[in-house]
Image (cartoon, rainbow, N blue to C red):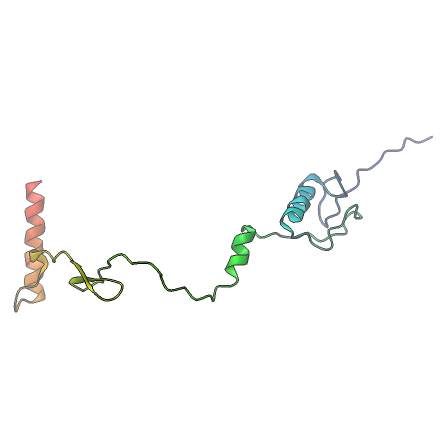
Length: 140
């Protein structure tokens, strides 16, 4: 009489070498199946008590379900703001502009040392900036 040694049945997912734990799946694939059931994404081929190596593996998205569903309708237009807006100073403007175009609080003026002198060229500006830079370095 020969002793019967039972081989553990393999997982139902193709290519998985782990032994069966529950419903024909190994522990990792059973957890994956539970996650697919919980999020409503259970693949049609993932049935209970499937034969070993008979079900294709499914790769789930790493995003949350709400993110993946929100990413598809990207062509929606942004609605116009209904409430009052904060005063915004556009680059290059001296006055802030409100939501209806009215003038707002005045913007800070540019530092006098950075303003180009009347009739000055680039070389004079560079020399002036270098002198200002070295003056701040010597004080420290």
